[in-house]
Length: 63
Image (cartoon, rainbow, N blue to C red):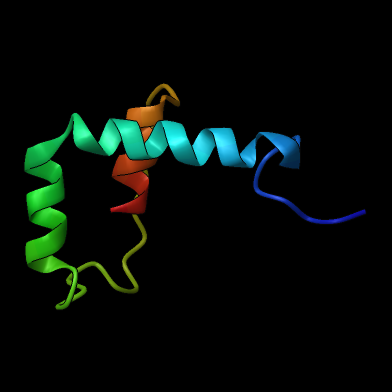
């Protein structure tokens, strides 16, 4: 059995499209991502949170 990050791998493309749409709705977060991505200020950090899983949460996690 393959180890996927989604329960049904056939839904991955749809999920990625939804995330791309959500990124367009979050310009401030995307600006921060562009500004700080080269520096990787959170590299190696362990961040814990307890929030509802939404498409916007996926964008935050990718950031």
